Image (cartoon, rainbow, N blue to C red; front, top):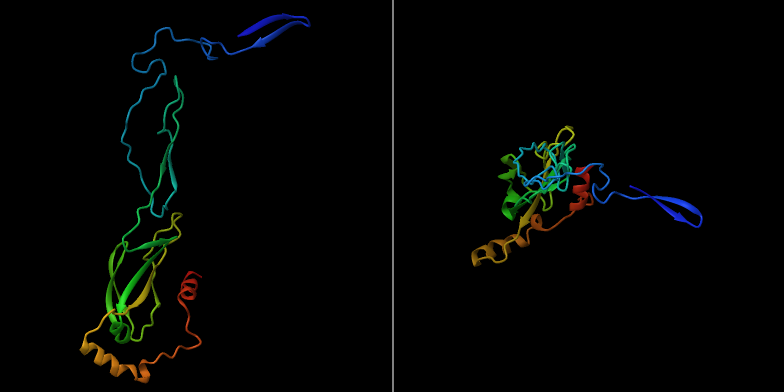
Length: 205
């Protein structure tokens, strides 16, 4: 609405929003009992969504036209879906790769063994070679997360830890004492031995 005001400097015109229609140019004489004149009502709808492989924590998916309607008609907004990734009991995600820590006994590390380890697609068998050192990392190619953009998939890296018993029986102690002085059981680290973080860095390069 416009309002003319006489002042010492002459007439001045001021414009303001109509208090009745609030600038819409029309009013509702009789409001609906359900929507109270807003042209919309609160409702609930169950919508199926497709979550693509490779999505990560805190990512947002958008569904066009599945959001709220504006007041008194118009095009509805979008529905934004926030992804929250639930941690796994054993497996840890690093990008598209999966990390898993596997404990083995000293005997299995020395003599070698075959094990079953969990992956995102079920258990698979792996071979632990004789003489495996603590911190060795095994790679299962293609056992990681699918790339969101369709460029292949990551790997699963298995970090081998050698379990040391906290207590031993008298018989076990006698056997270990016999092995203590054996030259084959004395550590002889070579200059080319790599640490855990160097090994991880090497696998990600």
